[in-house]
Amino acid sequence: MLIAVRSAGALHRLLDVLPVFEGDDRITVRFTLVPGSEFDVDALAALERRGARTVAWEQACAREHDLILTASPKGALRVLSGPRVVMPHGAGFNKALKEEGSAHLPSGLDPHYLLADGEPWADLHALAHGEQLDRLAEHCPPAAARASVVGDPTLDRLLGSAAHREDYRAALGTGERRLIVLTSTWGPESLLARRPDLPRELLGRLPHDAYQLGLVLHPNEHSRTGTFDLSRRLAPALAAGLILARPHEEWAALLVAADAVITDHGSTALYAAALGRPVVGAYDGGSELIPGSPMADLLAAAPPLAEGLPEALRAAEAQDTRRFADAAFARQGQSLRRLRGELYRLLGLRPPTVPVAPHPLPRPATVPRRPAAFAVRTRVRGHRIGVERLPPDTTEAVRHLAAEHPEADMRHTQSASVLWRRARTAAAPAPHSSAWTAAGWTARILAEAPGCRTAAAVLTPERCLVRHRSAGPLSVRVEPCRAAGRVLRADPAAVISAVHAWLGEAPPRWAPPVTLICDTGPLAVRVHVSPADEADLAYEL
Image 1 (cartoon, rainbow, N blue to C red):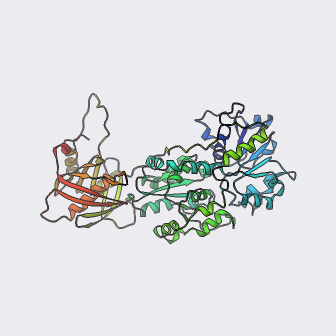
Image 2: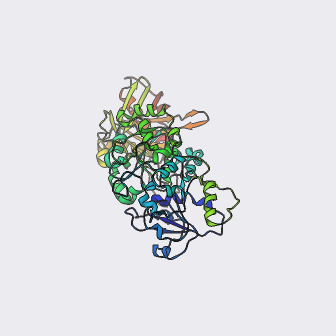
Image 3: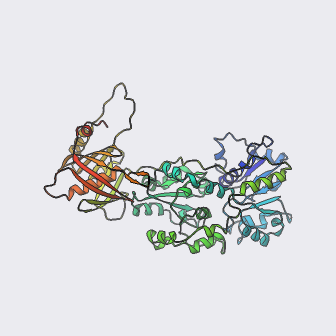
């Protein structure tokens, strides 16, 4: 069997089909790269760690194959010998590209690509919904005569991974924050092409302890731009905690983990809708989106980002997005079983009797960067302190700058009113070693940084030593929240900013111990401030 691909996106779609053949030693799988795509850079990268075997295009053309799978009708696929099966390479047919084929038709429905000498060259078009079959029959009846509605294997993989949502969020460090995912297709009408600064703008307005931001780019954008240049362009947003999903599998795990999605006209949002995620629209219009398509209907109903994100999210949460996905995906949960029947029919073999099921998505491997500096706004009301932390370059009004030493850059550490350091995790000491105690390091920082008012050492997720210029050294204990059998913890660095703000407005004759309430993101944690104890002072950093 030959898997013929033109781009990384096409390969990823076809890899979701391969569980159909698991356990069958009669099947040998080879992959080949169909020439001619501008997005063929790294097209086969997802195979590198799997030990898959590839064949050159010339070799593929010279052989007879028992089955050929592809996820794009473009390229010289008709010269390959053997039964040919075409899968859609997205969630339906929602876009038309005027520079390719028929300007008003998506390539998946365009006779220009589907016919050779007036006859369909594919033996099977495996579609996800009857609406796609109706549109194919309208635009290319000969191809529709060879089509079957089997469902969408990629969607079934997402739905089958829903039980792993908490694992994905743990891998991303989301906690109780709301994970908002931006999805951007490729081309001049894409979200990132039209609004390249949007990730940074959102991060500058969304409090770090309440929101986490992810970005899913079309694989073509990864192929065209490359990881190096994407990381360079997005560097300020990545430094502020943006998650840039990898194009294979990780994008889907991010959708499963998400709380809401902001999208352009790319069909990735239809997968989010099938998961029931709220969808906010950020498409400014153009010629690519096909009127009346499922994606067009979803965007027409989605509240626009222009209304403001909090308002748009509230409006999006009031909608049931699954009804739009139902217009793009039929046979949900059945695709691999139906595909097995169709593909083995073309192979002329009896299918295996072992049940077939999609593989759960792996845990995300991308670890978002932990921001090393924050612009902090606080509100002190008696013993209750609200804390919101934003990137240092935010345009929002803030009260102080807090930075992690020595990870933050020099301009932030020199300007910060609050400097903190996290203790190293336990490890076997080197034969020769030297370490600061929490008492020694905090005293040194206040001596060397005249602009710093509070130096703090984060000893554990629940213990800190805080040294304030006026109040002196204090032990701080952060109680985790316990709700419905779960333990929820706030970032101790946010609590340190809360204690700093309270000390700046504390009554003149206050004396520890004192208990404060710190509101940070969705959590309200109790914070106990007492005279520094010896164990905290002597804690080795």
